[in-house]
Length: 467
Image 1: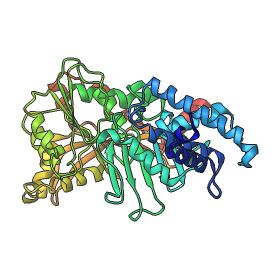
Image 2: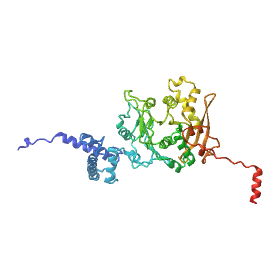
Image 3: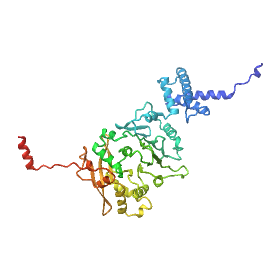
Image 4: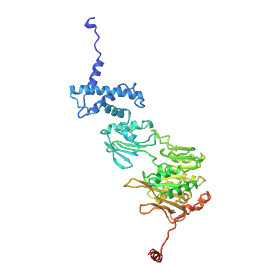
């Protein structure tokens, strides 16, 4: 065969060689790992039909690992010849980081797997975590690339059908495990991205767990247990991350086994150890602005489900009116939480939230206050100690059933921490003791401990006897 009949080498192979050579060349200041990661991603993009990166299987992970090892070997071989920067990572370290960056969540991977972390905060290239020890910088094995973080955020929320982009710079989504994700990018946020991942951890699932953590005393726990059995309405109040949801879950665990429970939440967080329980969560509007199912609709619908108890994870708007109406029409034993700075403030906030509905705005505050006293009988206020991060019950108040002029709801403390110390029983007798008796619960064990007052004369006689 003459030379003229030999087919010429296809130009595509020359182009591919040029592309591969360009990929191997580091950009200005680019580190060796970044070069390898760039090559892996380019090869995966070229073979997009071969690799399912959205839902990686064990086979896909094996293919990515094999590809990464080939590229690492190629880099090490060319490093002395082409004067490439030295790769100071082992092959296994590079493989694990690539798998995390390509198939996982990069620098967020280890943080998302750490069950001790309850909140992850990203400010551009800085990552903070909140755990039992407080807020501190995240322990990272690799630097943070803000641009790659945006890609990781979109991968994290891909199952929700939402994405963060220049066209939609604000993202609010819920993950399958109940974690809440909020992300904001430039030009809205600076530094960008601004990311918050709130993870709910039920670290105390029963009353003994709360007692062991000094969240409350045995006496207070027995009182609340009796209140649940007596079908009293209990409102759990506190600030952000004060432990309201966790405490509500513990209280719900005290429900009688045969009760049918309907639980309504903005985000699925409660995990009740009950057989007959239905969880309902809100649905946000889609990209077209339709399909929203608000919490108010869920409260209204729950009344048609023949519930023995209704639990509202957190009231924050117009659904408060429907909750009060339901509690005043035969649905006793409501449990709910609300953001507030004190137990007394929680009652004021319920009035404010009720008026957020069009119907509630037409009702007088005094009438709403009377509905509150009929719906709820106890308010449990929790607080997170700023120095120790310990979540504790600060006080338990009882609504005595009266409303003063100006819609002031009358109440009295049942348990209270004195000077920030132990949670002790106050000297006030229970105003709702008859409700305990009506439901077969003896209120006598929860009577206040008599306070013995000693006169100076008695002290003198005691001193003489001791002498």
